[in-house]
Image 1: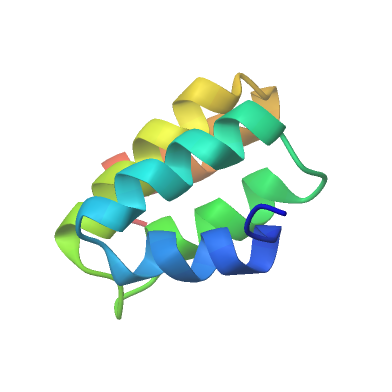
Image 2: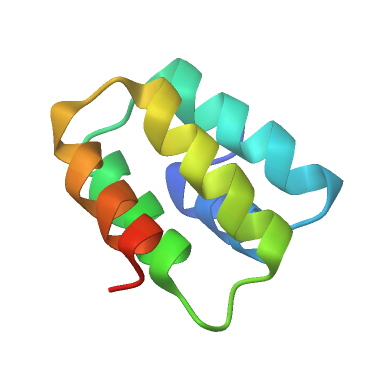
Length: 78
């Protein structure tokens, strides 16, 4: 059995090579709550730069209109 959504979020938040894979899995699965959870990583001051970059890409690839506001907030520095 594959990783749980919670496992994928933890891997994404850690950054590095595993984050890219985790982001791809989240996009492929499109689990409920993905936008909110990934946006939290994107906005986290504790997340590494690469983790935040993968989170941003993940939000865009999810294709959910709810991802627009978190992405705009980060771009505008809010």
